[in-house]
Length: 170
Image 1 (cartoon, rainbow, N blue to C red):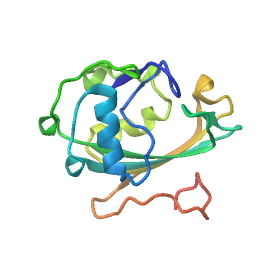
Image 2 (spheres, helix red, strand yellow; image 1 turned 45 degrees about the horizontal axis):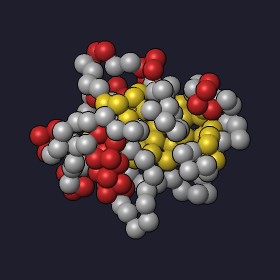
Image 3 (cartoon, helix red, strand yellow; image 1 turned 90 degrees about the horizontal axis):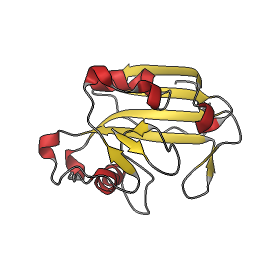
Image 4 (spheres, rainbow, N blue to C red; image 1 turned 120 degrees about the horizontal axis):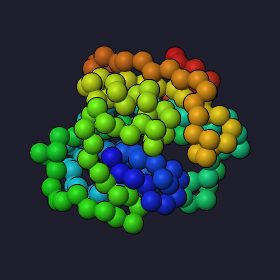
């Protein structure tokens, strides 16, 4: 995990990630952001897509690092074996990486939704989750409603459809 030093989510431990750049795949984005935020380099093909998370902010949204306001956020969750990485873990301007034992993960210093899906990730599951955050955004950091469902390995993970109720599972 990394302690976010600036911008959206500053002060919380989080996984490494960020926003897509033009003409970039989700795998390429995950590999690039991990390298930028902690120094580890992964070949995008080595990353395994394990989860899909849908967030709905029940206020005027959350201000992102680039000044945009988002009320709906979609997150893809990937894993990779450390043996498949190159480089050394380093602190960056954005993140201060830190290793935690699985039984000592600092959930109280993370986004509230992490308490619902991260244990499934650590158990090796594939999953999809929906989260409604209360008004007050990152300062309040409170999930009002959620559902996380396991997915069989044969189920493709697809981005949310624009025409469906965002929080409600299919």
